[in-house]
Length: 117
Length: 114
Image: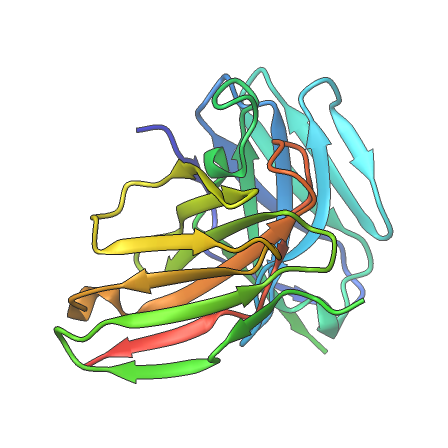
């Protein structure tokens, strides 16, 4: 089956540096992508999303880049802080089935980000 | 506004028993989805409910079932528990079940099957 995967399982960065977390997806029909952050003992928290008609979207300290040609998604965190330490998941969804459903949401395995003070 | 509330937070059961997990969505949210999270398989979709109807179901055996009530609260049930059912069960809510509706997750119920 098609799935979303992550290039690196762990990422360690120095406080203040920029972080880049990568994600590959394989379903060409996916048209909506989301990044989630999961801290220990908590559920995933929405960070930022992007639709397939865009290639870049910026939020507060975060930027998501979408390259549909190579089916690649990345999350950039500027000036990484200790509070950014968490597991980051990318997820993809397709509006083609069921008229749109959260049930089509496929999560990657996650990348653990550790921020060194 | 209160977030997604899941109860209980932790649960220990033995093989063969059954378990019921509860989820209260964010006020006004009518769509509830359930996910299973394990270190090996990651986050996997279980069910999606909207207006008391199961709208979509993941690839899990029939031992896993769920329902949604008229107030949008949802429960999931696992019968005849197996060791492999040990996982974090996450509930998420959204306004509607549309693809680009943001999902808000609860903190989950950590189920341990002994």
